[in-house]
Length: 81
Image (cartoon, rainbow, N blue to C red):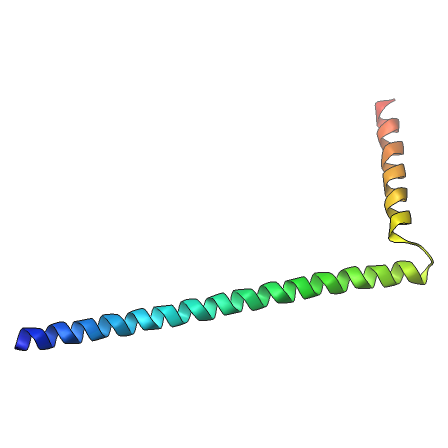
């Protein structure tokens, strides 16, 4: 009889600890997911800010990309000479 009480108490403690660990894991997963969403929002805000800046000066991002490619090719050509 006494042994079954001890076993029951140990089982209850183990189940309580398992529940606690599961709760912590769920909270960590939610926190990680929230941080990932915030990071994506920040990246999107930066891109939008850059697009607005380009539009303000009448420059498209394609123009800037083409300029970067052109200048890079010039620098590469100069290095080869």
